[in-house]
Image (cartoon, rainbow, N blue to C red; front, side, top):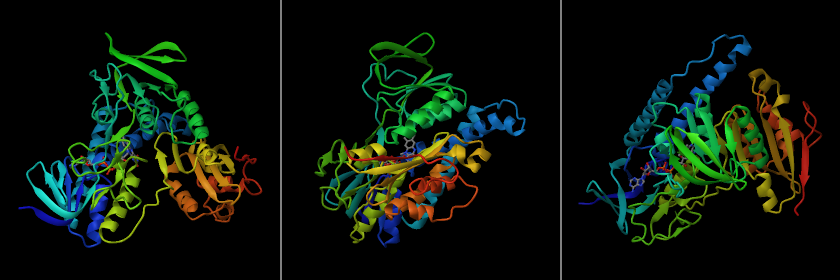
Length: 469
Ligand code: FAD
């Protein structure tokens, strides 16, 4: 006998579990089907484990420079297994808390792989059949690896597998210089691996303001990480001592050797076994197509998070989860996800929201930028973290803030205020007229805003105007 609910959610990641909990808050009866553990990629093998590792390696970095502060710790002895053990404990704690919370709140959690078998009918491979007028697909994404000869050799791994290694490789090659690749470069270079990043594009950190990405590249190389852009990988072969990547750069054949190769080459929506075609759910560029309310082409079926493509971020998936659940409950909400903060948890961190300079150019906007270097921030100097910048972008006609790009300590904690400023249509004067606490890194945001007015107090002005071409 099929069990009936108001709403069935397929996938228990940050999209799916948030949709389920929001549905409950709105009085719906909810079943959630998950084939692995609740929490999805984010909690089990993405955001949370990487941030646990990054938090530990920040400690290593701090210990290495402690002598300068008169704290004589010697060269830190890094126990990689212990770091990985703590990472696993963090994941266990966060995931089991979530499991308790979701079931305790009243969501019926079914374990297994689910597929849509007919209008309002979902079957689970455990044999259960569930019925509901509304189904939310939140099946997420998986690593995508390009077809490179040798990419299937032992020792060539995805982000999921590298999070399970029990020994840091002596030599690590990371194919892909995007956000995830750079976070792993930060982790493994700090634990002592010799890291080489190979990126196909002529820049790293696609999506990040290119000026900041260039500055980060300089810092990265200064830390001894080798990073080559504009490469075309030919093949990966096994050698007597490990693995070799054969690639071409500027028409020259080159090689790089490693003990482990991480393919950080992107993610693709995951739709296997969902019955997408039979349910006549339209897809576009390999992702489920949805409208502003997150409805798919099939009656009563919504899709959220990574499976709809676009910005594959946990907070976007969760935001979608809330919107879709509210629409199921009869509210008429459209998503407004054009102001999305995104953070790179490298050392130093990068955090961005709104338009980059390149995007403002492409949109034909007349704009001005103002940059403030953290070397002029007393707090940054006190922290020994002067390598950073705040760059704001304003629309020249309206004076409204349209982009904010930060690099420095804890900037991931500061970008939400700037997202609010952009969403609320605030101007540089609004920020400059707001008293910021001293001494903080966030004062630098106000200093950058002053750059659009009479100039910052603690450094010379660095503003630049750009008119549409
Ligand atoms: P997922 O988290 O992928 O969850 C989908 C769930 O659906 C999975 O648990 C899967 O098992 C389940 N499922 C799939 N098909 C079925 C089925 N047929 N039946 C039952 N269950 C099914 N984002 C950030 O915002 N910040 C970060 O710092 C960050 N770091 C990351 C680091 C790494 C290494 C990676 C890989 C990703 C990171 N991300 C980060 C991205 C983030 O993890 C994803 O954007 C987010 O998890 C997407 O949420 P989701 O709910 O759409 O899908």
